[in-house]
Amino acid sequence: MIKSLPSRRWREASSLVIAARNAENVNGSDYSILLLQRGNTATFAKSHHVFPGGVLDASDSRSDWLDSFSRILKTDSVTSTMDVLKTTGCSNEVRAPPTFMRSRAYDEDVQPFGLPAELAFKICSLRETFEESGILLARPATDTDFKHRLLDSRGGQPAEMASVVKLSESDRAHWASVVRADASKFLPMCQALDCVPDVWSTHLWSVWLTPSNAPKRFDTPFFLTVLPEVPDLLVNDAEHQSVRWLRASDIPASIAAGEVKVGPPQAMELLRIARHGECSELLQHAVQRAQEHGSERWCPLRVRCMDGLISVFPGDSLYGNFSSGESVDCTMLELISRSQRVHALLCYSSTDYRFYCNIPERRGHLFPVTHDVCPTPVADAV
Image (cartoon, rainbow, N blue to C red; front, side, top):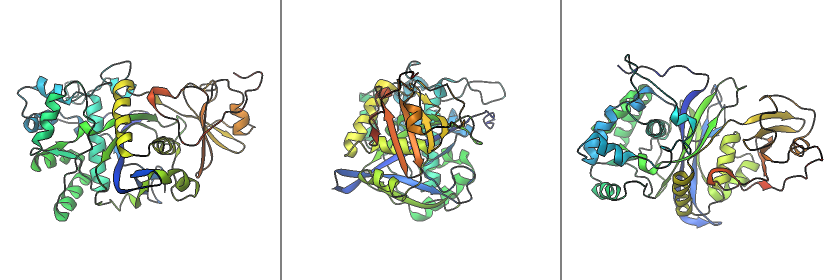
């Protein structure tokens, strides 16, 4: 019997960054990013723009998923199915974030989960995306060409855009309502539609831990996928008050103008993504980066300064020297001038983020577009 996941200080969640190709290239950008704006009464990230995502459900890890993948892929054994499902990078303990390596159990006999953790988090992100936006990213049984390409490319992920299963309006509304009410119905829905979640086109991008002083804390892998076109949406109005596709070239200006309200993780990822002008370039980078570098798990150390809130990241000399949420009697620039190694995001307001770093960016990522020159460290800098 499937049980709910045990409670932890950080709840496990998963998020999906969706880039969709536009018909035209405008200002050097040919794709947009999906952002959902949470409601005014939300208990977490109220009124903020976020990527689709939510809490991991025990059903996302059911071993029954293997039967569905085996049937669609027409593999002859569990081993063969797992071979096709295997994702490069995160099975390597050096590259995998702790989120994927933690021991888990779900049934009364304390048996291990039926699926590798990374696969369960991917299914979670795809399920939540369908619940919140109506976009069903899945590979149908009829997509025989893709199955052949998978079997020919074992040991590596093909750099392909995701597959969107298009349903009638009535079918989509029905299934979205069913899955929102009961996350475990995502598996029987996929079985009824003769498809499986497109786990091959979702690529590990980053992993974020909510700071320890936050009232709600999540351990959240962010995956990234690229769609061949902007799909129709069916937004869950109970959770989100608005939705928008933000063109990549407009990201910095939209944040600065207050058109989108984002927290530090979303700001960091959007401003990283804005470095890529074309979706094909973004996709290739995402695939290669995930395979070669995996991901670290970042828990920002947030320090309140006189002029704003600074998020200090691993690698910064100041990381670990403060308690998250601590206040200091200086400006943010004065604080980072005390550090020889700087890796921080300065938040002057919800519309003014500036990234400072004088060390190589970690795990193959590019610097955010708001990367500024670091101030000269003071003589007694850490």
